[in-house]
Every structure is written in structure tokens, then in C-alpha cells.
Image 1 (cartoon, rainbow, N blue to C red):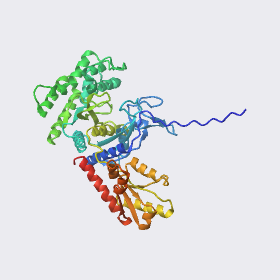
Image 2: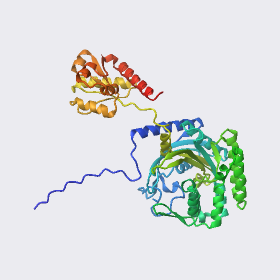
Image 3: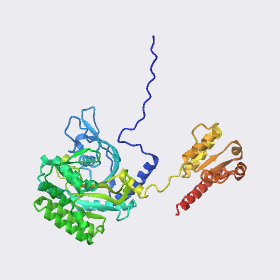
Length: 520
């Protein structure tokens, strides 16, 4: 008995976890935003560069684990020559490789920017994706902190170019040397304590999210969240926890004084407090002096008005930072997934990484940079109504009444004439024999106008132009069929030669209606 052949199973369409499909509106919004960021970076004298999505794994940095298959944190594969390659984790490590490989041809200081996707092989969650876009700017070969100060100023200018007003953002600045001084003071200096240092820094970075008590738990034994999940802490003793907390709450204490401090008074208070707390860790004093210089430069350029702030609680988690670190933070509130009002928070950050290029070179190569989280910043701009305000008008639809070669040639010519005039247009590509389906398609597509020419119109050398937006509005006002036929709703007949002019006239009238509806 012959068995019936089994039907092949239908392939299930499914999106990989932690990845998203991007629709037209989001793509256009990102393009709009990236264009505005690029204008600011170009104005500062930065030039574009592009690096590949894949790098050899050992080029990506020491934060990768030492394992047989280096895939914790990154997506990796083995090439046919047995070398491990990984999708880039950020845009900074690939730039360091590019600079080192092309060092003889690059003019220093090398000022460059680039936008692109980065990949994290981490557990996805709400708002946490495995692929996202960053937009970076870097200066390589400039040892002075004036390059760091300029990064902070450029970030402030970028946020304002995107429509975020002063008072709704701040660029917070700290120094890794200050942070290293804290680590030395609590006995966590040296390479052997690198992992615990990172745990401490990440705990401090959660100050806005968990508050002082939550951070204290993360600095100690650990913290259990609402779901019962336990995060192991840094294991510091009470004295060390108190020292860390006193340092990283200095900025908040200055801001919460009962009287209003000038920006200079606030900043000087922070510097004095830092010097007192870190008196046992002399290595941190170089960091305090660098912060003083950055503040002086910001003040000289007029950015001390709340745009740039010295803040000891500003922490960047990556190990490769060696000097000033900075973070762009939005100050306005948004409603989160739980319906709670929360401050939007960080949309980008960076710092000085003098050791990253040197890994390849065997000689010191100073560098500093800033990275913007494009997707997160786009969400913020949408909340403010600063993105996607310019509506994209759907294409004019040239309908198909007859399928013979001559007729199709005419329809295609109408379409090309409109396109050549700068008007979005498409010729219907479906089953032309069901004309009703063409108008349904136009409606679903949001087409503003339909161009129609049957045999009678073709014999007379004319076309019908149907204003679909006005037609939809009037259809709600006319209820009688006879009245409808008599009204010839929003429809006109013009000579073929006048097609482009008439379509443009209708589109301009529709644009004016939209402006009036918005009160512009």
C-alpha cells in the first residue's frame, strides 16, 4: 500500500526576537532627523566615513569575553580561514581600527561622523532591541580637552537643531579619572578588579531609574525587582557604599539647596566637594582640573546657561573611556508603558578613549567622540511633535481603462510627465479590467488624485482629473444619486497637454486646505 506523499509544511513567517521591521513613516522620520544632525556636524567641520557591519572579533575591544565562541554580547561567525568575525557592537571600535589601518594617509586631527546600525546579542525587552541605529562624531588626534568641550557644545546645538528647546535638555559632564579615583579610594584599583569596577559604575548609572536606595542595594549584596528577579550587586562594604553615594549625589545636593545658585556657584561647589571627598585619591585631581577647563571653555562660549553641566553622577559604562565622559539627557516627562509620568532621560553620550586606537598602533593616539541613539531620540522627537510634521503626499494614480499597446503607452506617458514635473505618480499595475478595484486601491493608498482616460476621452485628446480628497469630503454631504451625478463631484476634464498643470493646481489647493485645518 503506497503512502500518500505528505504536503510540504508551509513556512511560518516570523520576525527574529529583538528585531523590528521599519515602515515608511519611521524611515522618513529617521531620514529627516539624520539630515538635521548631519547639517550640524558638517557645520563643525566633520566629514563622513563608513565602516562595514562586520569586524574581526578581536578588533571590537576587551569587553568581549575570552571564550571559544565569542558570542556573548555580540553576534559572531567563523570565516573560511577560521577567523572569528562579529557584527559591530558600536561605531567607535570600528573607527579605531579604520584609523589605525589608514594612519599614514589620515590627516590628524581626524574629524569624522558616521551613522549606521549596531548589534547587541543581549536579551531583548520592551524598548530594548538587538539592532538599532547610532550616529557618531569623533575627533582623533586631539589630546586637549577642548575637543571634549566642543563635542558637548555640538551635541547641544544638535538637539536644538532638532527642535528641542533650552531647558528641555542638558549635557552632563564628568571625568573617568574622577571615577577611577573613587574606585581606588574603595580598594577597586588594578586590572584584577575590572569586573567589579564595571558593576559599580553600572549601579551608579541606574541612579535616575532606581533612586538612591536602589543604587545602594546594587552597590551592596544586590537588588530584587518587582518581578522577583535578583541582580547581584558589587559587594561593597557600608563605608565604601557611603563614599560612592556621597560623591555621586553632590550635583543633586547642589541643585536642591534652598536658594538659587548661579551656574558658576553651583559648579564651584561641586569642585570643592569633589576635592574634599577624593582627598585620598590624588590620581583623580587631574580629572577635576580637566573638568574645570571644560567648564571654563563652555562658559567662554556661552554654554554655561544650563546647556552644559558638571555632574559627578554622569557615568559611561564602557571600559575604554579614559578622560571626560558626557551624556545628553532630555528633561521633559513622557508616559511610559505603565501609564506613569517619567523623565525621558538619556539619548546619547560619549567621552575620551585615548587607549582604543593605541591598541593597534603601539603608540598613544588620543581620541574623543559622541554617539546619538537615533531610535530613542526619534521617539522623543515624536513625543514633542517635532518629527514627521511634514506629511508625505501619496502618489497620483493614473488608472488603466484599456489594455492595448497604444492605450498603455499613453497611460505610461501621463505617469512619466507627472514624475518629470516633480509630482509623485504611479500607473495602476493590478488587474485593469476591474475598474472599481482601481479606485478602491487609490482610496487605500491615500492617493490625492486619479487620472482617467477611456476610449471616448482618448478620441477627444482629453483626460478626466478626479480630486479624491475633495470627492471624499463631498460624498458625505450629497445623499441623492441624481444630485451626485449632476454635481460631477470634484472632477474635471482637461486637454492632455494641461494634465500636469491641472494636477499641480489641485495638489496646491489640497495643501492649502491642510494648512488651514492646522491653523497655519
